Length: 151
Image (cartoon, rainbow, N blue to C red):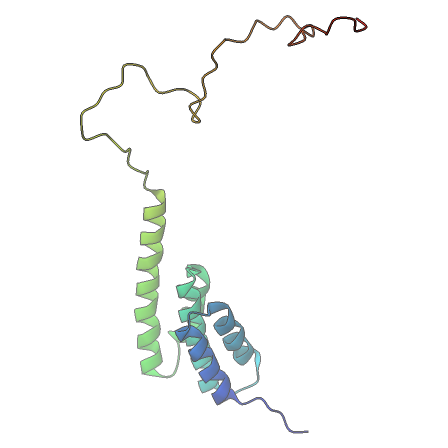
């Protein structure tokens, strides 16, 4: 029985998915290549594709974890790529975390306008016309019962 699985076509499929920004499709394709019993060169290329796809989705930990074994590759070119990618990922992760931690700046009115009254406590701006009566703990109908009703 002949298999229709062609690793070269699968790699190209994953690369095309990356270019289309179909990161979910790219991840599925590259993961299937990593699981297949293929020569090391295919698995290395698939891992590199996974690093790119995870980085594009800001899944920094997964991308960094995949870079680690690539830094131990027998290929100097792959080692250099993995080390460079690790640095990029660490910088991207740090900037993403620091930008998420920054408080948002208050919007101030540049005209110098100062309101006389403080803004309402309710962010919707709702302010009742009549204050609510004190709660006595007993039921109090809003309207009196209609004439002739049972009371």
